[in-house]
Amino acid sequence: MLATLAGRFSFADRAERLTPLKPGLIKTEILAGLTVALAMVPEAVAFSFVAGVHPLVGLYAAFIVGLVTALIGGRPGMISGATGALAVVMVSLVATHGVEYLFATVVLMGIMQIAAGMLHLGKFIRLVPHPVMLGFVNGLAIIIFLAQMSQFQVMGPDGARVWMSGMPLATMLGLVALTMAIIWLMPKVTRAVPAPLAAIAIVAGVVIAFGIDVPRVGDMASIQGGLPSLHLPMVPLTLETLTIILPYALILAAIGLIESLLTLNLVGEITRQRGGASQECIAQGIANTVTGMFGGMGGCAMIGQSMINVKSGGRYRLSGIAAALFLLTFILVASGLIEEIPLAALVGVMFMVVIGTFAWQSITILRKIPMTDAFVMLLVTAVTVISDLAVAVVVGVIVSALAYAWNNAKRIHARTHRTPEGAKVYGIEGPLFFGSVDGFAEIFDPAEDPALVIVDFMNSRVVDQSALQAIEALASKYEAEGKNLQLRHLSRDCHRLLNRAGQLMVDSDDDPDYGVAVDYNVRTGILGGH
Image (cartoon, helix red, strand yellow):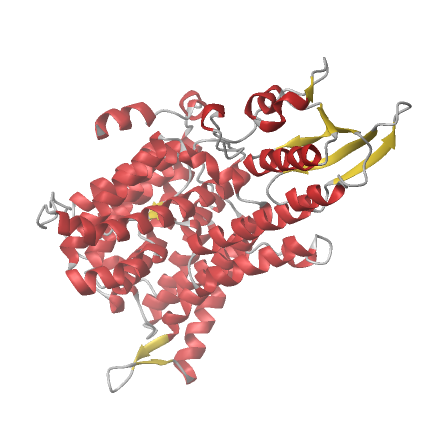
């Protein structure tokens, strides 16, 4: 099954297939991949510590997830790997049941993501409003910044981590500033080498040449290891196991897809690419299924590394493939060299990612946009930092939807006039849906209205079952008063679905043609209660 899906989606990006990679582009892609790989090492190790697993579990996940998604993902140039958003969910599972249950959970998570892709659920990411996207990137930038703060801590005499001070802190900050300065100045001098890679190389060379005593990658943990091998999760195949891993798998699958699809949109805005949501869901699912079977902790898209890649010139699948292969090379043969890289250089790179990721224009437009949009943006940013990305996006979408419903609920009103025959006409304006049915009912006065009342829906739209029920209730009120009610300019769908009020409709050649978003069976009488 996985091979079939991989074959189906490996070459979905037709533009990339038709664009031959010239030597200059190949060099740019490979160097961008190298830069990404160097930045991924400390993060993969740190996320492993967060999840409570061995560093190689995180590094293997970064390699496998990164390679698979680079090959068959929905957005060339996007980078995936082990992430903190998933790691924080894994902590309690690993602590309670052990790492083997984590591997089984990652496999189930991948299967769920494949199913989501095959059902084309990725298209629902388009429902995320722009203020939510701005809050998402701002919150993520803050998280990336806060994650670097741990690099300014050292092991104290009592074994606890303490903040740097004095000369060690000054040295660390100086190297971080030097890294950021090189990244800023390098493009003004040459673009032959990605600025982040040049900064890492120069700062590492200075530290090694002068023997400067600062924290290095090797101080976190050794990254030396072998090739990942097939390791089926050693858990009993029982219903009890499923009840343990299912809730975690569902949460991880949702978080992974939300973060990946939002990153896909963000990268797409920079690279001017569209589509690929369902393909990305399936790619993430295949990657996690394979990772779980090879002893990895699973992963999803990494916005920080994706930004490093794109800003370094990575636009094709080659950069992602190169990043994954460089990461494997580090594990197999170059661990000693990589462990000598000062953490200050990598912190400087991530600080520049923070500056590039944060939507600074969102600050200036706060007073210019509707208050609701400003609130949603700030809310999503806060929830992203306090909780996690998936919760923040869901909260933002819900608040935006409620605000939209409230605004539309206030739009319902009617223009009235009398016909020469003495009938009263209500011209309804605004959508009729669950949020506006109370306002709709308040428009009418059955006791005082004349014997014939016409309700014209030309400038309205019946949206849902609550709207149909409101029309039924209105018809019942006029029927109880012994008065005639006519309904005009309702769609054919409304004609079919309305029960009690069906005989009150007047057909017109200019009746609208739209479907009501409700599953209704006239014979059951659900709407009318018969």
